[in-house]
Image (cartoon, rainbow, N blue to C red; front, side, top):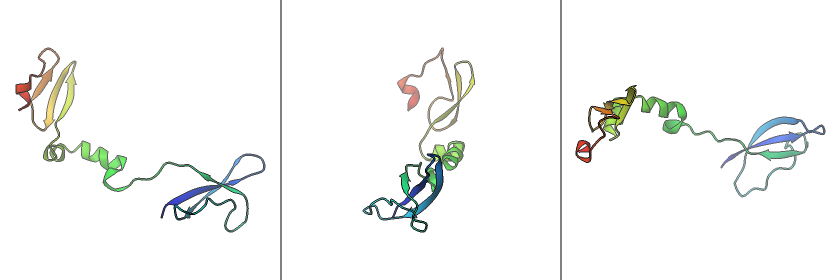
Length: 107
């Protein structure tokens, strides 16, 4: 079941206390706080995605050249003006703007 975030509606228009409620997706949104009876509204918030797809995990994987290579990716790192060096994967060891890659270089 999803967790929904609600916010208390204050008389002065300022944001009130927020709280989370575990509800079925089929349930109607709450209109009042379950404990205090104060009026509330559902708030749209960003979701949390943990595990191997979180920002920190993806950054760690993108910096692991051996893992990228084993997954079939090629990684080049800029090392000068129009000059890139291969760190992982298949392809030429260097790419330079004055020497474009040919299809035969990618095999």
